[in-house]
Length: 275
Ligand code: MF3
Ligand code: CO
Ligand code: CO
Image (cartoon, rainbow, N blue to C red; front, top):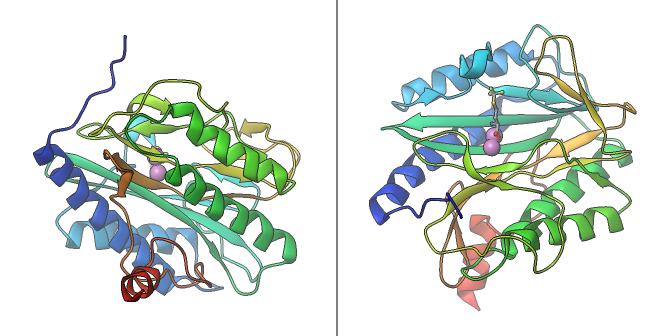
């Protein structure tokens, strides 16, 4: 019944290379991000950095998307289109990088702080960061797809936030989007059993207010209906027997986003190795 493919070791190697390229480009975004730059400048950086590494930016012309990266500011949930808008102190911005290399895709995003965030902006951003980590922590062979959504929903709603339903994580490989759909809400024990070699993204979009979204007249930009702030983080993972490998794991901390140690940072890996 399931059309979810199990990737071979060579296929996972290909997805890992593309994923690490996307991760490196996202690290670069953190370095250039500051008040006063435009989302078009982020787009130019992502396009040129991706090409310099020998890859290609998957969003460009994907179902007609006009730019090389998605930039989603404040109440924009996802699929924001880079333009001349200038980043202002206090904005939060998700930058979603997807790299194609040698026929394989790697997909990762993060929300960045422009200057000093408000308490509300910090809350929704940190809840979304932790939601992704908790979703990832559920992944292992034999777990259920619904466990990922349940872990995310339980935490995010407990923090007074809501989980967007209209967009989901997705299988990935030689295609940008393939089965399964990875919902970020769910019930414990429900859904497909995960098997080693499945590759998919987890990318919870968390709103400070209601989860309802609407798509603007440009046919892409998704915003919260109530105008509340929204934040998102995304990783590409491969299921293993004992857990998962985060293929888009960063070896250094993101500037302008990760202000405390996160479970997949080099800092934490070093300190746990020392125990
Ligand atoms: N990167 C997005 C995702 O996580 C998809 C963007 S599609 C685009 O699935 F066309 F807007 F780029
Ligand atoms: Co994705
Ligand atoms: Co993405």
